Image (cartoon, rainbow over all chains, first blue to last red; front, side, top):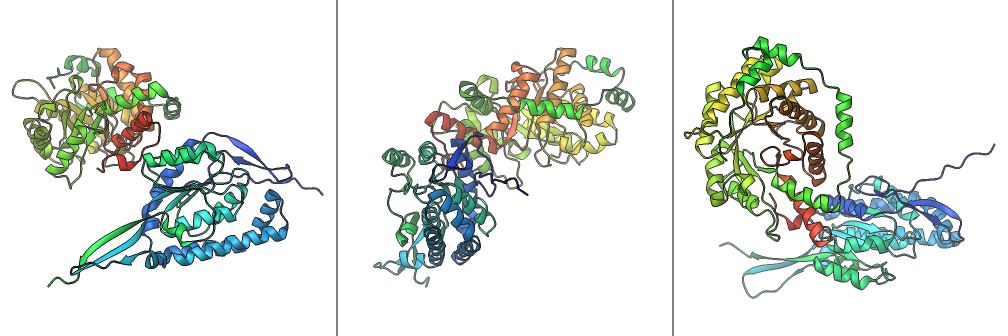
Length: 282
Length: 334
């Protein structure tokens, strides 16, 4: 007996919930061969605004969690991804038109990357912080602190690995994230959101928008309540304009670049706090 | 603010049909037709869906600010906190001096002197560009003290320079059906609002709708407060949940509209508590305009009791002015 297909509705991920776009818009996502895969939500500027509100509300809790705890939470994402690897492999094969072997390699790399960044959570401050030498009876200590809300344009040519490569490092330091997924390959981003929603990541820490980066990114770049802007996937956009808009509201900006794992990606969205403390009070 | 005439009492008495005692008030108030709760909520929800954009939105944002009673009612209030509240009331957005001022600051009775002093020359009638000082009185928020203490509380705030008094009704007496006691108390407090020169401080009567349980009770309490001479009827203290809701405010506006039709006398409405976003505030403006008419959108006839609402309106104004979204770093921390 034949059975009716039950296709999945791919929605946005904002504040721990999966709403449709406020605008009601969707767009068709096609496989590499042009076949229809799904309707994805097409986020509007108001969805971006709502996502920033959710991300801002989550900053206190996430940045206030101990580094050790953040590391554990990030590691657990990798554990859950491991259990869902077949779903991601199938999605990548459909969307990117690659072989199962290549898709598996991408999922493996993405999981390994979560683990790599999770390990940094309670270590990066030791490496990028410092006890500064001063000519007086003081300690002078510099420590990195999270910037706050980071808006990210994810790499456009990768379903999962690109997204993980930009989101994970921003989370390590305690930032919260609003990420615009790949326009052509958005489905894995929403599946990843389902993993995040069922892991220990507090709501609002990661917010995923699907749709047109050209439409949404300018609103995020000029948003006064966004503290950092990662333009890794914005190479095809007019990203200099985005940089100019970001400068108006004093953001940290990462220009388009490759996505190799690095400590620099973590420290790109931190602020250095330097404190003086007397060596003794007697 | 200049003195306001006491409501034509004889008209109220004619409506009640005799002395304002328990029996007559009960007969009149309980004879008022019941509220169609589903219809009321649908009407309120419908009014909340109006789309207010572009120039209308700009107008609504500015008008909202001009109708705010900027409020601080905490046990931890200090003269310094009141001074910073006043500074915010006078210059809501220091980066944009075209921003209108709020209508009034609302404080506890012992802070009235500090508010008056901090306002200085800005103290005055909001219709004339000033900022009024409103004080909560009568053992706010519970209202649980003796009549003499409540009257003393009121007279004290008026003597300190309060232009408006926000009193609470005795909800216990109201719910027990002792309408006469509630009526008498409002009349007595109104009398305590009299200044030596014969003018009166504006009297806002807080119904605390969150404790009245039914829409029917809200309608009765609204009529009672208006008949007893309240200049304003106010939804809530802000200390009880639920505070102001759109259906309750709509219901109170309908009473005010009906009273105006009967008597020609205009009574104000003040929703207070729980209105935190510009979007909500605009829904209230729409409801007022559609129920009592746009002429009610003045500080003498409509107010928002709010504290965090102002910051959200300022963020919206900044969005309109700059074209990009603003953030809480660009307004004060209250």
